[in-house]
Image (cartoon, rainbow, N blue to C red; front, side):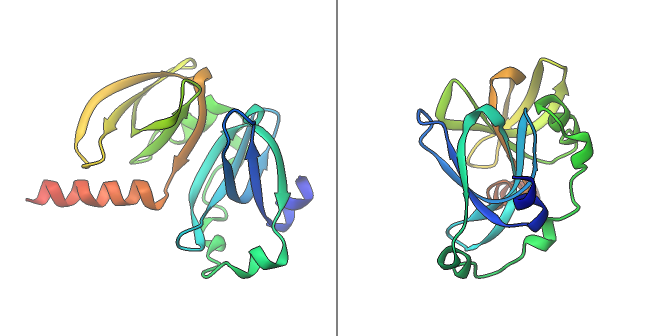
Length: 174
């Protein structure tokens, strides 16, 4: 994996069988706790934001083949290099600490594979993250406390979060 990271080779990441998900992108960091990567958006065929996955959620990965590499329409991955303090991001709590100033993050938990929470970190302890949630209409709703040990995936700076932020800004101008 370290060679794949060093060479910036795109990969597919298969999650454990009960998750039945495959994520694609370029891995920036992998250790015993977490896996941080630049996401690849299959619809736009370009790189789109970041994700952090708990390492135990990953069953296997494989490097892209030549045909898959040729599908990249906009090889914009360089825009994401050097944007995160990877040396300070060694577990979920440390990652969340580094994301405290993010405008929005998306969080999946062990309890529910099909839905996720999108919001802003309002309070953080070693065991719990409190998010101010935003709904699909870009309206701020209630706060939600999430046990950090239950977080399996964090996404941020993707087109999903950016779209919600833009909607929210437009609503506030009306």
